[in-house]
Length: 362
Ligand code: CTP
Ligand code: MN
Ligand code: MN
Ligand code: MN
Image (tube, rainbow, N blue to C red; front, side):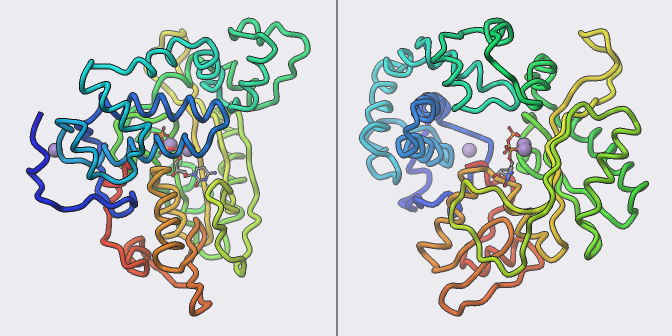
């Protein structure tokens, strides 16, 4: 391991939005263990402990070198007793007995399996597990279970969706999107957001944000869906029309979804050859189309990572008396909305150094 003092006493911020977190993780053995603990807490409905482990993992991801000893963790923020105990054990034994116990736990394994299906979250997974179901086959043959449309598609295309989407595939989908927009409205543009904008090589889906001319944002997504349908490339679509209201204050609850026009899709991506004998594979695609003047907030909100977004909002509220969400930024003191043309403007309003998308992998 490299010694941390390579960076002299520069303190690590407890806010992910004040850290630069690239994809180069020097503390994988620790962060992977902490993320197992976080997921296990999430599956047990223990959100506080889940967030605690996620924050601890995120701090370690931002470090310029590997932790050499558990004592080094003492001067890091967000590392509680539970997280530090895990680091200690890994430093001493190379692994954590608690993490291994969880990974062998029937409930954890089953919850993880069920949650890997598109449309299945911890609540549904738990209800299935509590009925004694442990495999997909048992779920699919259980007469009392009624799958919704999303879950049905999730099982139908499970093999395809569980293969990570590559950067090349994301680029091919972007061309599909561009072709559709050229047909629908040539002055609309599409930008890749989510994990691929942060530089990831693979993703579980591809996220796109559409910039439409003023007043046209609500028509774009239904037109894209119609176009994909007519091309026979649409396997599933869940369109949510805009409930956006210009005058609404930002929502401090991070879990609340934004109110922009958006859709969650499963599309056919053309391929040269395939294990399945088809010339296409199913890929998850998310689209959002905000009003033009809200584009920078939406872009910032959809770029992630999730923890980075959460901390941006927490920082705005607790350190700056401002409310931020995917729609807008509001100053509680002056009772005004703060305008922005770019993401840089939003960081500036918050008195934060600009963090590039590839440094937001918190
Ligand atoms: N997001 C959002 N509102 C939604 C769905 C997603 O604001 N209704 C945001 C999330 O907060 C996240 C970003 O969109 O910041 C991307 O979400 P997601 O695709 O789930 O995660 P990625 O970071 O792209 O990871 P992956 O590569 O696995 O897709
Ligand atoms: Mn490095
Ligand atoms: Mn994504
Ligand atoms: Mn997504």
